[in-house]
Length: 515
Image (cartoon, rainbow, N blue to C red; front, side, top):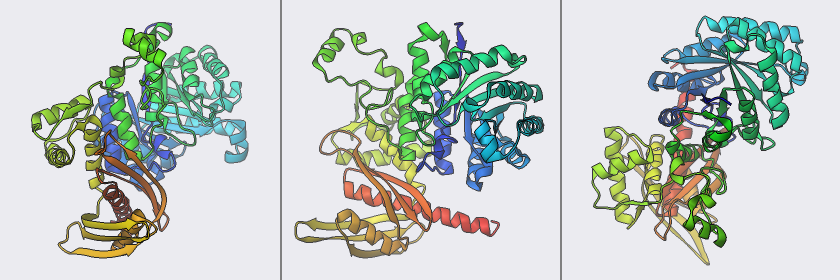
């Protein structure tokens, strides 16, 4: 195989955000998009603009603010979708409209109720229509892996002739196997007369755990773009994992003869950012970015590693962003050292953000004797969370124990006012009492859907992170916070989610009034 470059199309902000419970606001999407730029992905699929006003706003903001990657917006093969996507990506220096239309027999029969000729006509007409807004057009025959081979060849040829510059072959429901999927790509290369006028892309889902394997099979047979997400997040079982695709190509370049332009040392930082902002935690044994990815417990393995690292490690941990030196700073460290460490971790922050982060660092340093990389990452994610806060936690006191009714007394202050409100409530435990009290003060009565605690770093004084999901009047929101006091973290995470709910409610009122 020749030495070529694979285009990395990141769809974390579109397909990844469709994971249940992974909703992101515009600021969070923008921060991830900036991190993806530092990671040097080629294309960022920023969202599905027709889906909601919020999605349109996020895509447009990313198109306006993020420089470097191509910014793509997804659209069905409908004029109203294309108009919306075109308007959203218009501010980008490099923009793409990504069209899709189902082609498999099962989708034609039960979803679209259209014949092959109707599907073909619609696809061609909509590619031609989109071309007036943007030169860079991608077409995806949805459920391609279950589409008849002859029809797939026909529609790919027709859409390329209509102006598609990328043709994407999605395994929409994760049905494909590596062998047959590779053969599908090989057939397109051999049977589509104008295939040299477009890039072949692959977009695989992980329902059978084969998304990465199928994607790489596509690459071996001629695909030169891979659509993937950070941590493999996505609908149902997820998408092909960006970090696994990239590191497979890098580690086994002897076989593939291919490379990407991904800055692999930023992979871990990007993974953690996406995990924290979406609330979708990475399992310990996840390839490349899991906590155990470079851990060795077996004595034979440890002995081999000490003698020669390559005996049991096929990649250097540093190549994906892991560091052997976790202890980095203390309470006497200065702003310059603090900023340099953030840069080394892969974060570039403004002067204003640096000031607030450094102040928070000093507060934490007074509580903890040892500051780890994970503590610094948590500070940054905590800074993101503050944007959504509506209520500030002023004071909190809890009592609990055996034969003691758990009680919480809390004082909150609505941000932008000088009128703190204090109340108390009981509960089944201290956390329940805290949440009952917050409900009484805010008037936002939430149902707790999910609650998770994890230690971010080691030791008795480790930062504890609380991630939760709540529902209020049909609105579900994720909240997170960290503190050396897990009850404080629980309260702040709940307030973070409530802040997002209040902002969403206010936005919906504004939209209904035409604001």
